[in-house]
Image 1 (tube, rainbow, N blue to C red):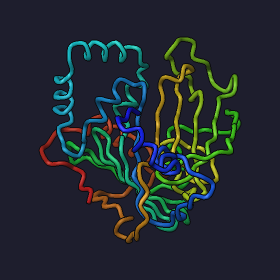
Image 2 (cartoon, rainbow, N blue to C red):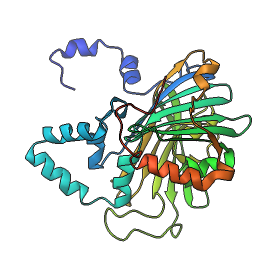
Image 3 (cartoon, one colour):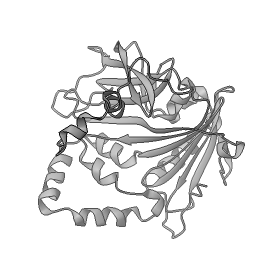
Amino acid sequence: MRNPRPLAFAMVPVAALLTAAGFSSNTAVAPATFTQGIITTKVSLPGNPYDKLLSQIDPTKGNVQAQMQQLAMRMTPAEQQQFQAEAAKLSPALVMGAMMLPRKGTIYYRGQEARVSTDGLSYHLENYFDGAKNTGLFLLAAHASPERVAYTYNAATLKKSWQSIVVTEEDYTLKIFPETSLVAGYPSQKTTYTLKPGAAAPANNPGEMSQKPVALDVWTSAQIPQMLNFAHPVYVKEKNGITKLIVYFDKERRQKMVYEFASVQLKPISPQDLQIKANTPILDYAKDELQIGMKSLAIMMGGGPKQTEQASDEE
């Protein structure tokens, strides 16, 4: 970093510089164990041309298509040409993933209960999970129509209905690093997962995706409850809470997804903070899987007929 006053810069304590850069000494005071409070999360797709564009859209403000058109109009001809060239190299799965992915989330947590609230371009989503009972309630509501679906589920269903990427030790080689780094203020230890040869059909062409992520970097903290790992879209069997993970989709590691804690706030959580206002009949995933799947797909792909009032009623 350039500084016109090097002497002033030299007077800043080294420890303060290290802390600001995300490093901490062994004598640093560890944060309190997270037992209840609010966590904000963010998801990004570095290397995906849609990432910068879609991250500027706020689905809760409505009229997503108009927001996208305004952003596109601000691009110069050179930027548009570059965007189109980069987008042409993406697989359909990566394009769809960029369009469907919720970018920001809020987790309300107390004891063994948690509620996640987030928004995709076309939908509002809430997920409540009771770790003591291994059961939960899931709500998916369209932004542009009154369509919504809510259903109960058990822990065995969670991977199927929420965590679309499942990582197992049978398919990946693990490496644990002894050092830690700070994620949202919490010391987190890194573990890498590398896909074993033959564990999935290989991708032959540059940019082409394997059937499974080729690698993952996972950071965990002993002060974050393991139960909160249900909140991200990737299932990784870790004993501590995951604060950050990077999923690499192609062998060049250019296409990736980053999930991480943006902030952690310790504060009292009320029973109301954990409640989901379904405002629709609650189905049972074990009994109504087909109906739930059809409704969920319709909502995520556009939400049905348009109307002026927003369907979701996030408090």
